[in-house]
Every structure is written in C-alpha cells, then in structure tokens.
Image 1 (tube, rainbow, N blue to C red):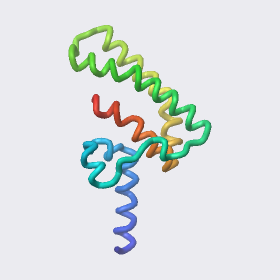
Image 2 (cartoon, one colour):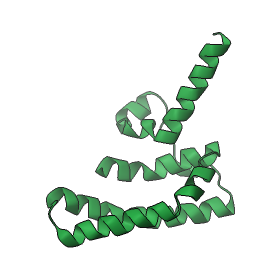
Image 3 (tube, rainbow, N blue to C red):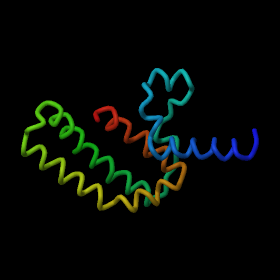
Length: 120
C-alpha cells in the first residue's frame, strides 16, 4: 500500500467514524465482522462523560418525538418539540465537534446514538 492508499484508507476510516456510517449496519453484520462494541469499552474524561449524559437525556426525549412524527407528520405540537429539541442540539454542536476529535469519544458517541439512528 503506497502513501496515497494509506492516507485514503485513514481518511475513509475517520469519515465513517465521524459520520456514523457504521451505525447503519444491522447488528447481525456487526457481529459477523466482529465490530459489536459497547460504549463502556471506550473510556471518557469526566467532561466527556458529563456531555454524554446530556446527549443521552436529549436522545431519550427525541426518540418518542421521532416516533410520533412518523405516525402523524401533521401533529403541530410534536413538530414544535422537534424544532425545540433541534435548537437545543445546536447549542452544543461546537462542543460535540471538539469532542469528536478524540477517537474514544467518537466511538462511544456513535454507539450511544445508534438507537436514535435506527428510529430516524
């Protein structure tokens, strides 16, 4: 593998990590390819742990709203909740981008957010 191929391979690996490409694989494929990992496998700093707790609470609020939106896209109150939760997520977007530079955090985040990805 030449330098270009190595750089390209590393770029694609990181791209998949930051975009959550792996989260779209069904669990059966993950097990078959040996990538069934748990969030607890990736140690976080205390600040990262606090941030993830905030993210998980947000996910817990967002999943029912996603489900409701699928059932009734015209539900005005539910659509307002989607907007409010989306605006809330924007407030910590910069912090998330910073944390995603840490490979352990990025893997942990992708595993935790997988359940939301399946709902979307």
